[in-house]
Amino acid sequence: MTKRTVEQCLSISTRDVLSQRGGVYHGTVCWEWFGGRKSSIAYTTDWRNASPTLVLVYCDDADGNGLVRLPIDLQSTRLRHGGQRWWFLCPIEYDGMPCGRRCGTLHLPPSGDIFGCRQCHDLSYASSQDAHQLERLIDQIDRSSASWIRDIGMTKSPEKTVDPTS
Ligand SMILES: [Zn+2]
Image (cartoon, rainbow, N blue to C red; front, side):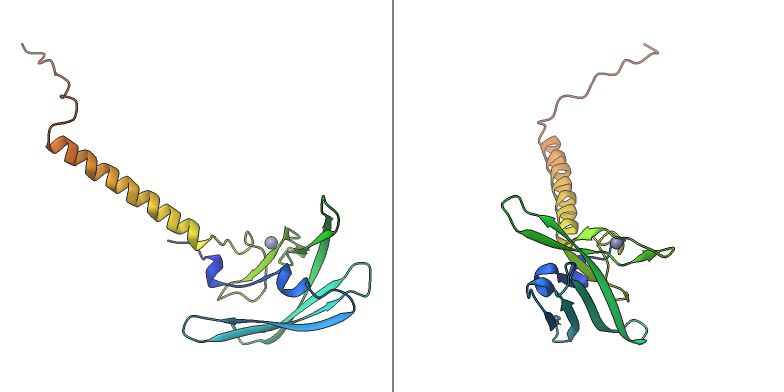
């Protein structure tokens, strides 16, 4: 069973929604899927206070519950050469406590209703699954070339067995 992948999700990065700094800003992020289906979410950022806020607004396709209004906490880290980098804090809650993991991208899986980090949604990258397939393929080639070498007699001669009755 293959894991759900990041590529199957709607994903937003801090670049998508935090590039507009200062004041209050309303924007949308749109995706076009293979086959032409489109998805979009709206967001609002408010940079008027020392700690800015971000709210995502989107339609919950999974159970058609209508609009989801999801506030996302933000955190900044200082960059070595000056300036700062902003991060999302994952909002998915466990027993009322948010995951809070710092991440540059949040994901909404096809069946999900809340954006969250890769770990909470247990996502892998399709490219890493490809890498595993490649490893298996190389393994198969290794084995088949090994049998080919045996066929033409290039392997070590089999170890001699001693017949205990002799
Ligand atoms: Zn999380």
